[in-house]
Amino acid sequence: MIQNDLTKKFSKTTRVTHGITALLILALFPLGKYMEGLEISEKMGLVKIHAVLGILVFILTIIRTISFFRHKRPVHLKTGSKFNDKLTVWIHNIFYFLLFGIAISGIATMILGGYGEALQTGNIDVIKSHSEIASLKPHGIMALIMMILLILHVVGVVKHLILKKENTLKRII
Image (cartoon, rainbow, N blue to C red):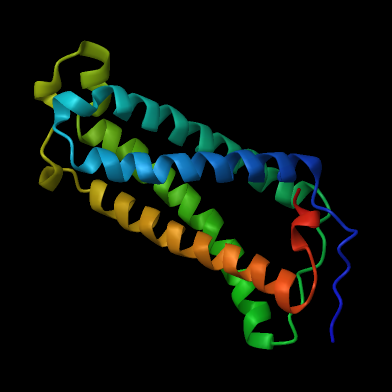
């Protein structure tokens, strides 16, 4: 049975940004889903909160990416399966691309959809319909993919804990 070295941790910057980002994502996704069913006039305060939290995730992702390349990282976990080992690396990499993609599409939605202007002026009439905002659908699709990968990520952690008796969270907490 393969035993991973769990004494090697990610940098403090990576650990802190990982935790804060995870909590923010767990708030942003349900908030975004909830706002889908609201009228524009009902959701403007929530849009502001969603945008601020989303920008914070974007900034934290930039910081975490820089930290990722500047600091030594623990070796990738081994599962005993080449497929699972590669899947783990791919999921982690896709997280970064999704975080950047979601943030950029969110910013584009704020600008192209008129939300930014509406928040500044208080005039909700400048907000375009969902069908007119090209970046909105990709934003939602990437967020959904993010949540699916997040579930897979948690399943992987639990699988390691149960099957291998390894608390892999020690590396990131």
